[in-house]
Image 1 (cartoon, rainbow, N blue to C red):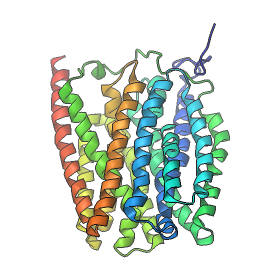
Image 2 (image 1 turned 90 degrees about the horizontal axis):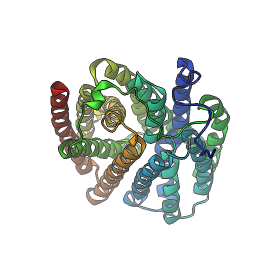
Image 3 (image 1 turned 90 degrees about the vertical axis):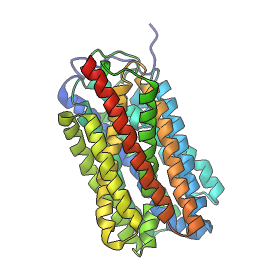
Image 4 (image 1 turned 45 degrees about the vertical axis):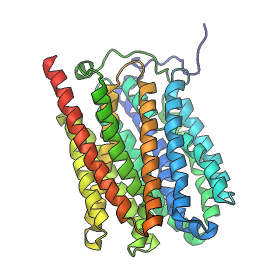
Length: 412
């Protein structure tokens, strides 16, 4: 009998793996992997921006083009990950991503030009995709018959937890060392995480193609139509474009309005600490009130934060950061929950991967556009105003999607 890398003794709902404590160990493993990979890439590396701008003598638009490359690469990689999970176990992909991250950070520390940094960011995109939405949704959908929204929200909160930790850690390292030496030290962390993940993640894994009959009833009542797909795309574009644009330019923006680097790092960390709490709460609330309602509420909170930050008024920056943290955390989780419900089926991995490619492209455009508009106007005001409009557009699309789906469920 032939066997793929993903095959093994553990089936998705075997009596051993179906024990609650073992399933929640898997969630803990996903949380840890996301803390390391996402925290370093999305929050640790941006904290080096000032040092890179000074050392390399480049503009912000040139620097932030690396994030555009990264988001496009992470989206493409997520699509590929969705395909290969039919043959390779998710835990193999996670360990591969950790090893690649260690090697990539070491190479980053030796980069001598912005062109070399651009060449490194596609590999960071692949690292990011190795433990992101596709992997999280697959493992949770195959191991959990209920409480999926809560499990997904806890696993995805690793992004916020890592982002709360790494800006301050990097700033601390920069006080004693160069940005190159700081990166070399960060490269050790993915390797240190591997022994813990060996204990937490499923031993053998499984292929995404296995079926799971235990789908929530509501999922089978939702028909896929062109209008609904278009609404999902618009809603996803609006939130990912705007939120990532704010987050990837936030460290520089806070320094522009007068904060020192330490305070800017604390401000950035506070967004993710708030988001960490928000992700856990939104998962619990979704179990009670439904994913679509929570998605709309979080988009409205994100819109409020976007408006306050765009004003540039110091007095409202703190409330704006709070709302940004809560709103983006909720939108980030609930987008994946809604998509996993809508695309539930044997091709879940491929469809989620394809959609995340779109999410990556939206994030890339938002990050790059805000930086380029800063170069053109000398301020983030115009770029952030565009962000406000895209979130408002997302809310409108979500309302149309929710109304259409509710008709399906009522008629079933």
